[in-house]
Each structure stands twice: as structure tokens, then as C-alpha cells.
Length: 193
Image (cartoon, rainbow, N blue to C red; front, side, top):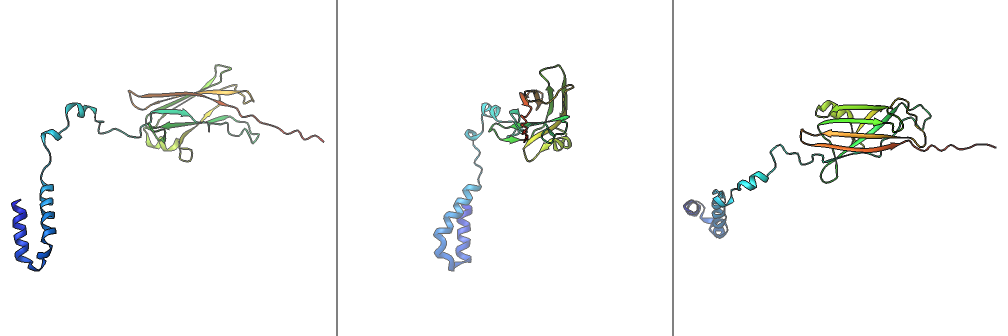
């Protein structure tokens, strides 16, 4: 308070023509002096319970808490009458708000033909940023993985592949999903005269 009084005297002596503004300036100076003082009191410090409930400093707010095999997964070349030797699997990571997000961690896929025991597998470390960028599809906001079809699998109208995926975000958090990718129904037109 002493600072604001002495500063007011300084202003009066130095700038007498601005005296009419003193009722506005004096409260502002007092407010600034009070605001600059420390406001940390014993009651405003967090308790040990509050400290334990706070997230860690390295917490990621958009961390995935769910993965899905996206419906965009398909058999390329099936509509161009080319032999489809691959299946494109789209894995979407969703955060706690249900929004698509990128991830880090260890991603593994297994694609199996339910009519046989043949399968194809894929593993990738998404913590490697080069690999993460390689498999990320920014249009679909999913990880796009191209896998070879299981041996003996033929894409027919009633055929499908069972896809299971796991994402190890860290040692304590493993996300898993399973879904089917059906072969598309191809309709042919009969052009008989």
C-alpha cells in the first residue's frame, strides 16, 4: 500500500495537469499492487488426494481407448476383374470422445479364412514414426494395412475373412477388436438378345 501512496504523490508532483484523472488511476494502481502479491495460501495448495488424482505429466488426452476394423476394408481389384491377391484392412483408433485419432504402440493383425485354417498376419510398431506415417491414411483417418489373402481363399459371394487386431498402446493397455470383411456381391448383367 505504501508503494501506491508514494506513487500517487509522485504523479501529483510530476503531472499536476492530470489530477482530474487521479480517482481512476489510484484504484488501478492499488489493484495492480494487490494482484502482484502472492496468493498461495495453505488452503489453496492441493491435498495429497487431489495430487494422486491428477493425471501424469506425460498423459495424452487423445489416447485411443478403442479400435475397430473399419467398414472401408475391402478386396482391391475385385471390381476390375483382376485377381485379388490382397485385402486392404482399415484399422480406426478412437479416443474417449469417439473421434478418430492416431496412435503409438504395437499393432498386430490376423486375417483368417473361417472355412480353413489358413491365415495371414501383420505386425508393426507404430511408435516408429516412419512406420506410423507409412500406414496412416489421412483421408479415411485410419491405418491402412495391405495383407496377402490366406492360402486357398477365393473371394466368392458368400465368402468372408475374419479379422482380429490388437494394439498394445503400452504395457498396461491392450486394445482388441474382431470383425468380418465380406466379399462383395458382384452382379453380372445377362446380355442375351
